[in-house]
Length: 296
View 1 (tube, rainbow, N blue to C red):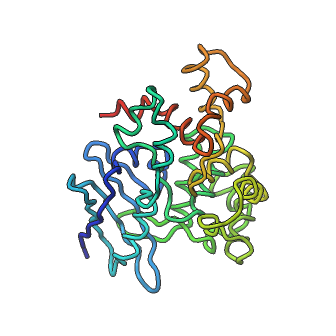
View 2 (cartoon, rainbow, N blue to C red):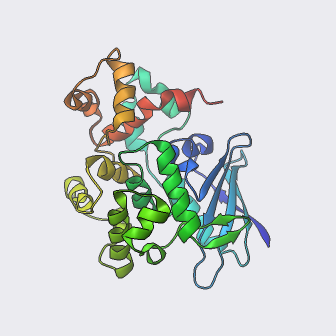
View 3 (tube, rainbow, N blue to C red):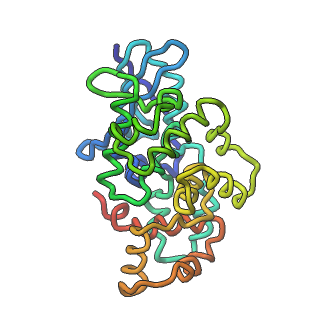
């Protein structure tokens, strides 16, 4: 069964630069087609509905075209979740104001950059973030692929949904032997169990009244989530205070702003301090300028 639906976008939205904003586009159940600039995602079913594979593209007239395949696809849920993953309701006016006087950042507003692709659920973002810690990007992709293909729901065409917390609530041995998650195995098993039982609700982070400091503390209470992971997650729920420093960001900063010399993290923090609560997004855009502004 095939269906096409459309979704209006705000004036300052760039589909290309949003889906190209970071590596999530390469992690299942996302797929990226750079030749035709299409983003595919396999959305899970709900209330008896089957999974729906959605191919999302920009019509060029302020609308996105979403081609759905899947028996009894829930079009309204796909529209809602597409708004979420592409950050269509995010207000970045404060960010653009914070960088307005910076000539070196003029390209950001020119190409409507700043929205960071995310998953339909914070749980999925949390799992994927844990899979990025202390390893290569290739290993991250392998772990996420295993999680999706071994625990997700089949959606036809060899595709699978991202698994529910209940489906992921398996033993640490499974993660160690089948997912090849290494030391993360205990963390992923415990996390899935906590979310499945209702002990932990990552979706609540999207609308919490907690201060940024308290939210970060709560996130770091989860095994496997340190400063980097918590600050990465905060960006995906709309908090940009933290820099989420990892080896890649540090190396990019050294090369671009410190003549290739290693420096203390404190100096990196001071460099972006003037952007206040938008400092993390300012750094991310700064470090990905070549990829975003020069990508045809």
